[in-house]
Image (cartoon, rainbow, N blue to C red):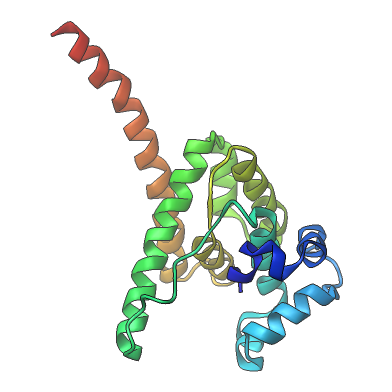
Length: 193
């Protein structure tokens, strides 16, 4: 669903602006939202995931589009269905680490980061757009697969899969922090030698 947003000419600036203004707590009656859902989701997916969750992911994607949105290419996925699931699961895990790293590199505070990871679905409607705006303002890219996973994890926050999503995002953030802390130390020891 996010791919068309990266092509402003074909998607249109009006629909993109409409999705950026979307209120995840609102009526969710925006034509651009429903047009996108009609073209890219089935009724079964819509029922399973839910309109509020999908609207939040689309809103986050629109806030980052067109220049700061990151998503994997579909043209290199394998033809076999089982292999596709494996490839997309790996891409999703990679995006989660990337999301945490991007938040750290953008200077997102640890307090805001932990609030984002602890957020329920209601809390995410406020915290996620703020985090996306922060990333975009810092020039970082938003890995949309990680956003979709984070939103999905809010529905079943106590589930093991939901926890692993949030833990992986945290690993990305704290690995980036550790790398940043180690960088000045390795430079200073190199100067002493």
